[in-house]
Image 1: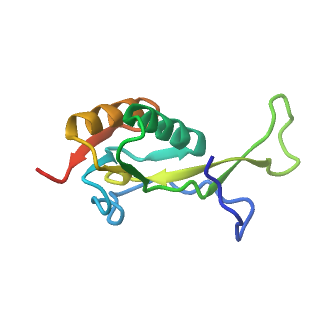
Image 2: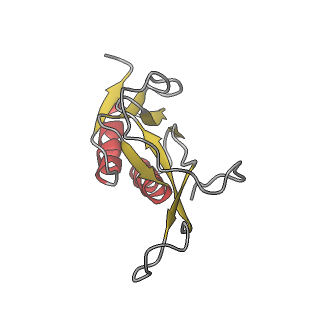
Length: 137
């Protein structure tokens, strides 16, 4: 699974509510087809890996894919039934923060029908609404 090799700060603040639309990473850069977000949210490293596997499984070793997001935000958690106080929990997992319009995955070297189906399967595994993007439109 994806995770940063090293971090400047071990524990981050949660951050404000995600506002606005993506101005960077919002267009196709590598492939002919893409999966784009329609809403803001956090996508965990596990969800990215699960989507990636769904895509790879559907392609049957054909085409090339790119993952355009990276989970660099550490999320802390405390185990259940622990009283309030005694500091912030340990880092539990990492997430990628996405805005509406962020390109998540890209594909090339396959036909549109196959790409559409692969991205549909991947989108089921993600917590945000996604839309299929094609260069040929």
